[in-house]
Image: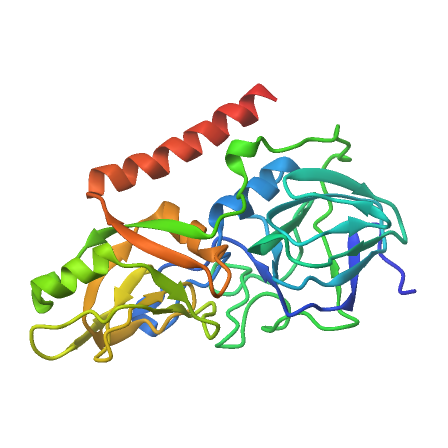
Length: 320
């Protein structure tokens, strides 16, 4: 067994499907063709950090669908949030939304998915990987950031930052209102535009009155949807322009594509709407084959939904 250096340290025994180091991302470089990447579910990511007393942007592990097998090489306080992926610390179930204490040699494993898609593992101090363009996030499709610019592999060893003071906590559980749950049909709220005038009235009605299935080829770049065809007035092509996070593109075949954390930063397809910030986190937890439908909100509502959840989480943290 490799020896640690006195810091909370983990060894990856098996990597899972896609396990990466993520923080809140690297905004500000889209003009250079660099998407922000970062955690797909920001709220679960921040909640994991707050459970162990970390700054909100401390680097965590994002665990997708089938989790890794992890051995702890040092005494570690950690937390797990987001998807329920049947985690166990040694033989004991470890449900999402709570802290845990791991001793040297303890094993964290994952089993069958119960609900959700992505879990977040935080350790006290945050994972120590290099900062690249202001972020520790792995940009999977560009091959930089995180741990050597790639998903974790068998044999990788990650350490946390050394805390200025020794960390010892009571066990904490996140209230149910801040956790995801099991669901088969998800409302996704959007702000219409910027190209709504490029669609027929029937196309707009189809968009808002239909259910769409998340396809199996969806990923961190974007979610492909399948459902009733959305019709354009003319061509689906526009002059190539910046693609905001959450933009809903509609190519010529009429099925939407939602652009996410590692999207191409410019594109030339019509955009019928943009998903609001709160529901980007909802999307991150939707399993292929599950269904969504779209609902229109205005900018003021979108801001209120986002503000309300962070204020509620802040009140809970202060009350602990």
